[in-house]
Image (tube, rainbow, N blue to C red; front, side, top):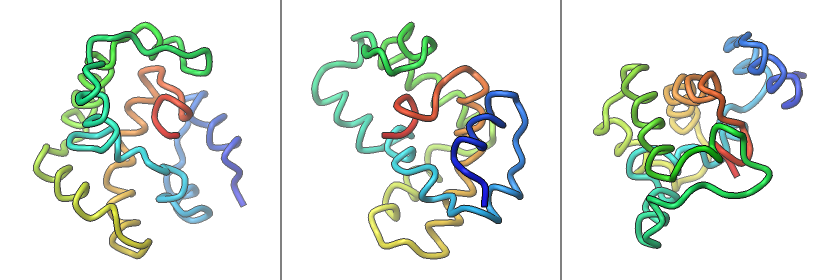
Length: 134
């Protein structure tokens, strides 16, 4: 079985073997709450409600890329990556509505659909944890 560290190492080296990942690990578990960072996601809404969109991301565990950004710029990067992989905001909102339910084939399908966004953000220098998941 592929370990999360092996996946991290592959991503760091720019080698993404999607088929191997999906075959050996539940992608929904790997992405954890990544969907909360996407358009309409609970984490983004929380930051907005707290009035923190223009505050810098802080914390020693965050990547250098994240620490050099405000929350607003981070979410702009997320939105740009989403557009780059060909997913629109309407589709993301549909995913957000579904994500609260138990794990099943549909949730795994959604995870596979948003995985390219995760990859695009990793390639921009964001870390798996805590930048994109927590």
